[in-house]
Length: 132
Image (tube, rainbow, N blue to C red; front, side, top):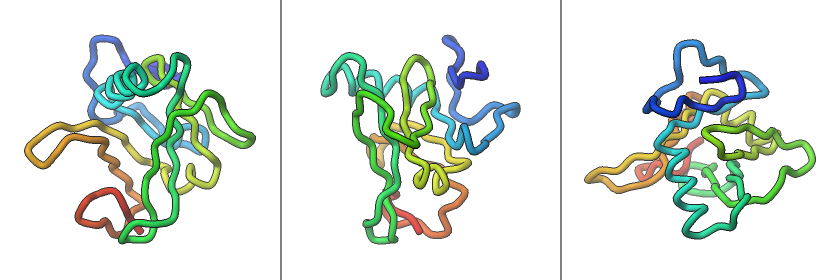
């Protein structure tokens, strides 16, 4: 992985490399499978040049929930990260809740979707999309 947050082209990363350092500037790690899922979603539903906005909003059965939306550009105060050629935007408030989070994309008997491994979550709901 390079300092810009791009993952290796032939390396299927599902956890952050040992050298990855979660900081205020890089609060999240995005796996290769999640990057590919975002690329596919942009191709199917978004527009060329879209990035993914990752945020934490109030709601869900545990108090907060993750929110993913397409966006064209950063907003004032956003962190802008790049993984595998995809731009990710995170507002400063959400960055605090997300620091140390790995975003993965999983497929299995329990369903298919984005999985957030957030060390700040004290409690998670059964569906895995909200936390406190």
